Length: 193
Image 1: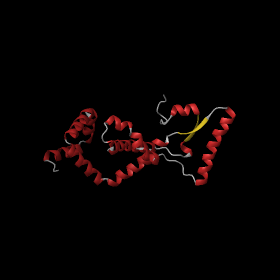
Image 2 (image 1 turned 135 degrees about the vertical axis):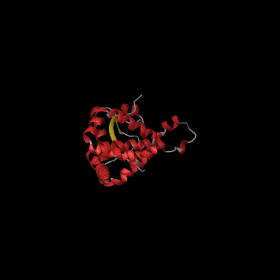
Image 3 (image 1 turned 45 degrees about the vertical axis):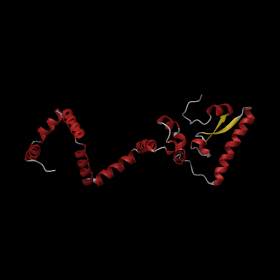
Image 4 (image 1 turned 180 degrees about the vertical axis):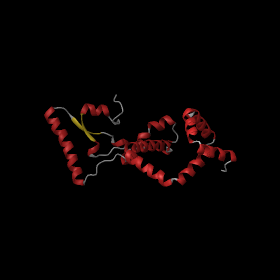
């Protein structure tokens, strides 16, 4: 992109009169922003070229800034990553249900993405012995509660096995038999009927 003589002259004038430039910007900032937004919408290919050039010129600064931002706000990074993952999962072609419409696909999303969910549940790593002890403790606790209260208790999976949950102590809870039957294979946030 070559600059015209007029553009060069304007640049020099702005450099000689910085106080007037600041004052004009202060008075007309909304108009300038609207004009810039309109231009960007009308010229997306030019915007892409400018952004790429700016990024290539300042790559080290940009990566350092992004690194600082990620370190300062890890919760935002997680939130963004989860949103991006949800978008990717929705974009996956559902070959197993290719004859069905979008509503049916949406209904079956849990089953289709159970494997992905189970991988990303982030269970604590337990040794085989610790795993057995934890399970024994949970089932023993349910049996003890049954004896003392006289109420039937079940050991339930928070995220059902059929929906990607694991048979792991982090995914288990003790519920009364009635509550467990009402819950069925619903996810924790789904309403009971």
